[in-house]
Amino acid sequence: MGTQVKRIALSGYYGFGNSGDEAVLQSILFALRAEGERQGIRIEPVVLSIRPEETSRVYGVSAVHRMRLSDVKKALHECDGLISGGGSLLQDATGLKTIPYYLAILKLAQFYRKPTFIYAQGIGPVSRKLFYPFIRNVFNKCEYISVRDEESESLLGKMGIVKGRVEVVPDPVMGLPLKEGTVLSRQERPIVGVSVRFWNRDRSELDGLAESLRTIAEQRPVKIRFLPFHLPDDVEASRYVMDRIGTMPGMSDMDMIENAVHPQDMLAEVSGCDILLGMRLHSLIYAASQEVPLIGISYDPKIDQFLKRLGMKAAASTDGFDSRAFAEEAVRILDNREGWIDSKKDSIIRLKLQAQQPAEQIVSIVKSARS
Image (cartoon, rainbow, N blue to C red; front, side, top):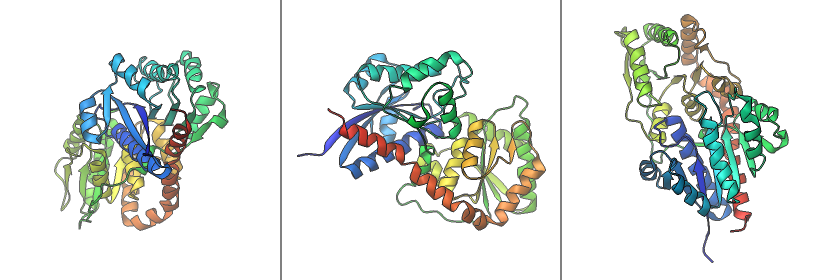
């Protein structure tokens, strides 16, 4: 008898060029494959993507256009289950159409009587309570629900979803491995990785960060390396900060990595840093997963929620940026990298193990379901 094959559709913010969401996709694909092998079945993913040809080429999986209803219906009708996630899919901060779209995909799969799964999502913000009953209706018909923080669990509780049905797990990117054969080498000067995005209209947080980075570079020779996670916006934000820094003092210099498009390529870049200063959530998750000391800049509760799981708080926020204090914290960590790593190692190991739990549960359910 041949190996049992199960086809699982994946719905998320895939194909848009956002490194964080692409890392989520890659991490889920790795986790499903590993768990399928462990449980003795082969998982064949089909990804709903805005650029299906590119997604198929990059990840070696089947993909269909997420906005072509006929293709989506065919994929869901032929699959053995649908995963929605991870990332922040169910939120209305980016517009009124986001929540209805992802709920509609789940609802369509349920109409076809396919098991549906919520994979380590960050729920909210949902400022319009009119969405609550729709989310409750769809989620209560899901076979498995996992969220990436306690705040998401609490919000689902307010919507009427029983707490015992929701599992709190880390973001799946905590389980993303480096590419096989990746070789990391330490430089003579510490590499300060920086991940920024535009947020405040007056750019005050980026001005404050530029001042901090210049202060760090004045105190010791460093290479400041900008790592854009969302192209092309983060490239522009990085250039803005570089322009504000101006000429680097002493033996310090700076550069930017613009060609790390694949999630594991960016993961390798983060792994080579001595410290990571990040606004993007997944820049911080990448750093934690590779035991790279990190400092968070909060612009959204999801940053604070992740840092909390490491026993940390953001060193600055877009609401108030103390440049001097931020620079002092970065220098303090650079002076005691090993101490930071030792203090966080147990938490990081625990998060990595927990990140595999959704794949374990989903594969087990799909495996036992009737074909």
